[in-house]
Image (cartoon, rainbow, N blue to C red; front, side, top):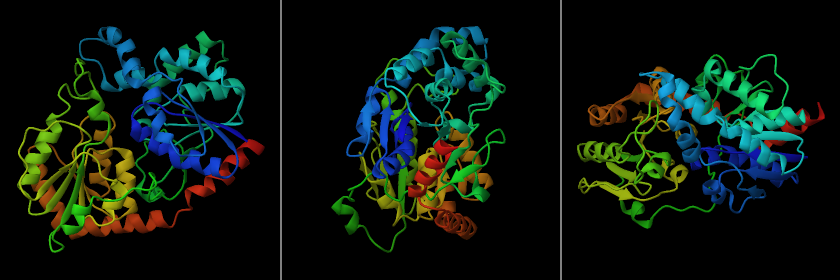
Length: 388
């Protein structure tokens, strides 16, 4: 088979696609990954070929920015997000994908739609990878935008413009703990990869932390640091104008908690002095640290949610923008943790560390996830779709 994998957004989107692309590449099939140039390094060392031909998400947002006023004085954040992911830039991207040749199957990031349109042109199946963005991209907003792109590209209309996953979708959450909205079909579910980034190791100083105290991992993800130092303004549903504000609130809250807290800053600047039990680190291999963590403070990114469940770690969701708020709501609704803001973060973290019910629920979700087939089984699904 010849597989096209398409990725947009931040490095977390690339990591959601990576295990599936790696599996089919390791099975001997040709995999070409089309992505923006700033995500190309995410696939280093994998059995794939990278084509950095897609538009960076920052550029897609900049193209749309002058049109925000057309949505009214108080635009619906869902409409804004839809235009960032499914705007006019898709036309240029599909034309770029055409130059990569024909493919038998498209594996796409759940928020990436150029791959979907190109699959329609080729008449081949397409599957979205696990994606938080897909959970908030309402077909009512996305459908008309895709129809406009089809018209400009000369593609035929589809019977249901709002069907964003007509061949099904991929996920790594057990069905009983699904985060997906009603408009998405049931998933082909696979066990979350326990180490997406191979070869990582924990900093040596972590081994010296007192074993008798709770250990917390805290991270606000990879998207916010990409926004720091820019002149962008906050848009409805978009990142805050000050990306480091969440990190400052996080460190202040961690200073109040009776636990060892490892904060992954991802390069964000923080001018709050950490207490001796709060350890700032630019980056840590998250799945490895989750194996020994008692709780996690997370922005609610869907990759992190799945990794926390994979290792049975309760969550305190401190969302910053976009689909993170939807994920935070599901974390609380499913009993996997709590949804907090900056004012309630310290209390929420202390509460989760002591909440036996949350720990039991996360363990149940972990057992259900471990009963799913491994990602390597995706190769059989891909081959069957192509044969069909």
